[in-house]
Length: 170
Image (cartoon, rainbow, N blue to C red; front, side):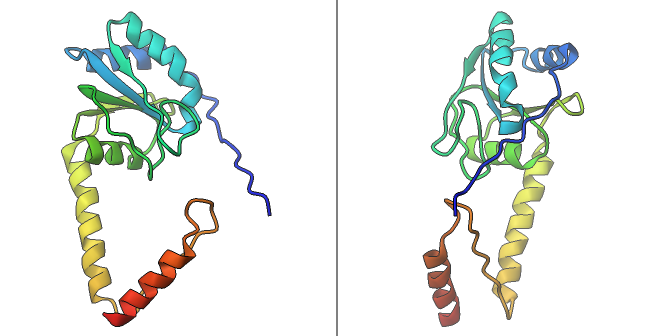
């Protein structure tokens, strides 16, 4: 069976107030890395130009699994050299992954809501705590389920079977 990936692009336009707020929040920084998910990837080039016009050096990287420059996936987050990171998108998962991997200020610009703000340390710590709690719970569990995806790159049946054997030994 052929796998078909359909990109779900946002129809939201970048508001001029959003762009101005981005620049205001990045004042004092010279370099900024720009990352987004596929939903907002079409806004990358205009935003790069806007940032450059406002005096920023913009870092854009292509990850191994990303189709586009600047695109990030939860499982494929780049290490960035810039002073700060601008995440164009919605949700917290991707900015948290960027923060964990890069330990830099992450500015979130959400085109859907118009909100521009820095990711807070408490949000990162909450995620890390939930991850630690999950590890404790799995160690105390009497029964554990292992889910294997059919999605290419995530279909790791052999790894799941090995994990099952390792868990049985414990």
